[in-house]
Length: 138
Image (cartoon, rainbow, N blue to C red):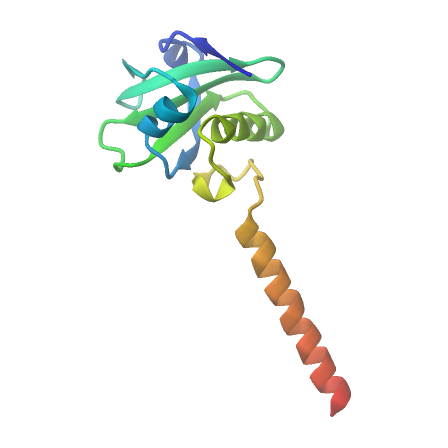
């Protein structure tokens, strides 16, 4: 469970953006009851909130001034492993009742997987199987 932290923890914990979600902060206010506060870091001013996930680490959810409307950024401390980053992103998604298709971008060290990737894999296997059967028939 995500435990709220003061929003200034985003700057104090030297967090970096690891994902952009296709979901506004208002979704998390509605689904999880989160309150967002004005803050800022070395990058820009934002509205955001910070949390701690026991045994994993801290995480921030922000919308930077100038960031596209309807999106939010997930921030985590720079020293976390890809696995811990993934767990924190998934905790944020769960709080907003979102699935992985809401993730617009992640850093390369985070492997979330998606239904889209599964669909592409199934289509590719089908095409390969079809090509093999056509060769065998000729």
